[in-house]
Length: 106
Image (cartoon, rainbow, N blue to C red):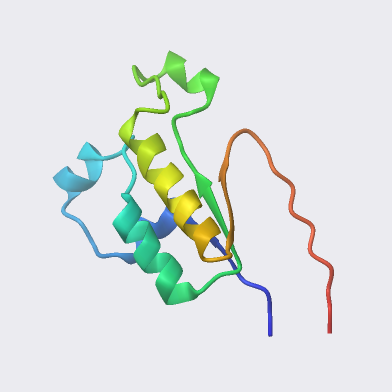
């Protein structure tokens, strides 16, 4: 069986088409725990990596957002990472850079 990963940062792309005004209103806001968990349950990945856009320090220059552990995106992504852990799925919220190297096992 091929190893699968889900980059949960893009989970909303598969949800549904949104009206332009609604889409623009959420440019710096991602989805929530329940929607991400639905994607995890559907795809059944062995690994989940959440990219929380907006955490990068350089983004402070173009956005007024400053995330803390109490910020909704952080709370929701922490819930997802923790839930994946209880299900035996490797999960992590990404920050900066992470290199994943997979060996081809046949």
